[in-house]
Image 1 (cartoon, one colour):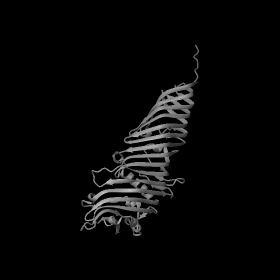
Image 2 (spheres, rainbow, N blue to C red):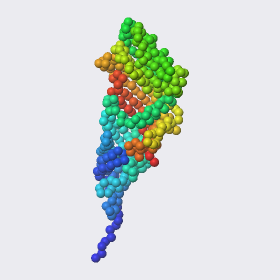
Image 3 (cartoon, rainbow, N blue to C red):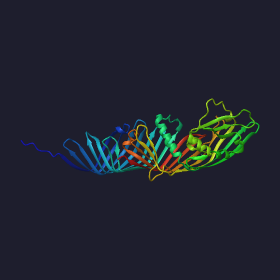
Length: 416
């Protein structure tokens, strides 16, 4: 009896091939995704061990869902071109597509909702041996992010060293700002003896190398408010002092800014860094202040901020290794940043001000992470370029209640 020799590989063709799939990406935070994969005009190769290789000019992934520890993702469809997939034991163990285009993505993460009109990857999208993803180029278009009750999203879980790094990064950018800050402050106040008054103060502050002339803050104040507050330099401290008129012994230091030797020299020239203004402190033992009881309302109107950073990229070392580079040789760290809108707050804590809107825009920005651990994302993406960013915040008083973020395009630089 002669035993027939079977071919090691069988090749079949089919106009369509449909299978369900589940894929895990352990190096991307334990993300698991699944859905349905349909091949058009597929070629099927089966080897003697039962392995299956699918190859088709086109394929479509439908009803794709992905879940991670803190988010969920839904994609109605992903169109694939020039696709190959390897199956073993009925599961996809390897997959590659020369092009992938996903539509109508939605990501939910707590109080954050992200909608992406189109996501595109070209140049060999594939799952790598390290459990991550690889691609030649990728971009997201039509991005919209909504944050509801952003102050209730929970405290930051960043470590102290990471918070310091982000603070240094922001400080470096602030020190390079050029442009103009303009706004109008309208205050309703009921002063002793002088009675109820409404004052309007206009501020026009040129920004040069991340500094403003702090004397312009006082000059912009209407005369009645100027008699209530003084901003002055004392030794190595910038001080905001309240001194209500016709009230003896009312001098109270309300805010202080401790200055390093370089900042002292800047202040002696009549200027103060933006980065310095952001770290105001209240002096210890500050007595209960009745000033808030005198305020009817505070409104900041006609906000017109136009800033940019056109210098070389900002580079900062990352705790534990690697570095963050903000900006590139082609994209400045901050390109045409604008803010418009107004905010209003009632003096009475129980009074509710009407909602107002703040809008901010950024023409483009770029950031690169070199050797920085990003929860597995560093195995996929090296950096990103963002274009046409728009942020809209609905404000109740000075508190944002909802923030909507839109971006025209996000280009991702692949990890090589």
